[in-house]
Every structure is written in structure tokens, then in C-alpha cells.
Length: 196
Image (tube, rainbow, N blue to C red; front, top):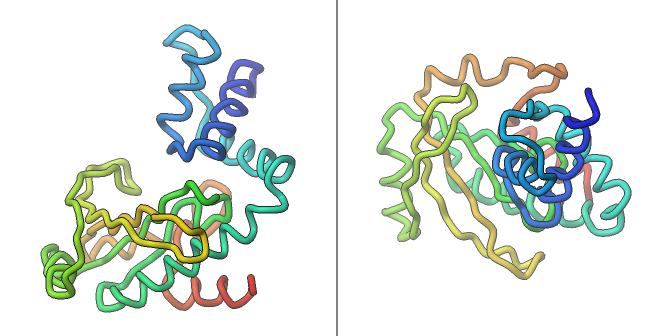
């Protein structure tokens, strides 16, 4: 990685951990904050994630593990509520780089795309429908909820991303680092139990 990419990755990592920005916006803001030309090549997400891990290890080692566990427990609650829709946890909460400012991303694999929304309505859960970028870079419908975390003493964004059941086949293919990119209910339950 060249020095400009390394600088952008490090600056983006700080924004992700300290301000809760997502990777894309963090990289673009880091580019601007560093005063680099708009056409400067940005680092990949893997490079930024490596910097995030380093930043957490240096500056947040005393707080981040407990925050991550609280987020995983909250994710597990939501996955249990939405178990009928084959929930899978992804993002920083799954990969272990989440802090108290991170949102939770749960992918639901539904026979009928409206069924998860109907389930939230039936349980009187307030949500906001949105369109987000999916795991293949495509636009995906998401139902966003503000969920209270008693452990963290704050509200956390929980985004329920709606996929067709057929999408589940490709969803578990290992990522560029050979890791499982998301985990099902049993996998998340194991992570929570191991972290206690």
C-alpha cells in the first residue's frame, strides 16, 4: 500500500472508531481532511479494516471488547425476534471491529420481501424503510430501527436488510481474507457465549 493510501486508511479508521462513520464516507472524508486531490486512489475496505483493528488495539483496548459484546447481544435479540427470516449478522459487529458508535446490520433472507415488514408492523415496531448498498454492491431495501441498548445506555441503529431466499446461497462464500462474511443465529449465539 502506498503512503497516500496508508494515510487515508489510518485517517478513515480514526473516523470510523471515533465518529461511527461507515467505510465509504470515512474514506472520502479522510481524503478531504488530508487535502489530497479528489482523484487520489482510495484504499480498499480490507486495508481500512486492518487500520481500524490497529486503532482499536492502541486506543480502545480497555472499552471496545465490552462494547462489542453489548452490540452482539443486542444483535442476537433482534435475530431471535426475526428468526423466521433466516437472519445473518454482518459488518463490524460480526467481524469484531464494532464500537458503541457502530450500527448493527442483519441480513434477512425471505420467501416474500414484505413478510419481514409485516412482522414488524404486527409487533408495533417503528421502523424507517431505506435503500442501502447490499453485499454485492446492489441496492437493497432495509428496515431501520432505533433499538435501545441498556448495556451501552444509548440507542443503536439496527438495519434489517431484505434479501430473497435465493440470495442465501452466495451469501456465505468466504471473503477476500477467507473469512465467513456473515453469521447465522447459532454462530452469533456462540460468539456471545464465548465472549462472556
